[in-house]
Length: 182
Image (cartoon, rainbow, N blue to C red):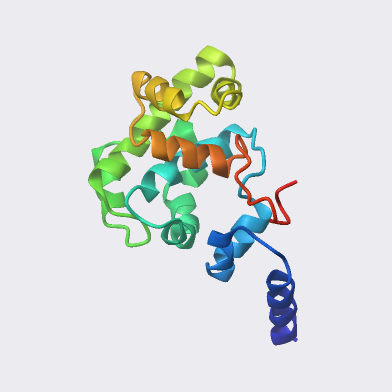
């Protein structure tokens, strides 16, 4: 029965026309493309998760991050920014030993710093969503990068910000013939 269900899922995945990166990717890449990538996102916790994961991806493939995503959720308290903002040096040292994460000191410490900056934006604007979606109107990923850096964020260069905009539906970069384009 399990094989039949898996076969059915694989066959459904195989019959859809997707963006080239998803077509060439793993089943996990295809499922991510089909269910999440490019869907407008307005939940602060999920926006924080994507911002952190996009930063963790710097220099790596998104497939690597997708494979580690559940480990990140567990290690970073399901991306609860209030909890992450309180992480101390001892917690960071513990995270650096976690093989389920990208064990880069700057990226892990940056996650804590980003949580603090994220909370300040929530307080000032009422929500991170309210703040971050202003950049979608003009696809202003370079402006987003500059503004986030001014507010104390790390790992938010223009390339990361554009990938964040793609992932959270701020821009629609699905191929014209992709079933998700519309």
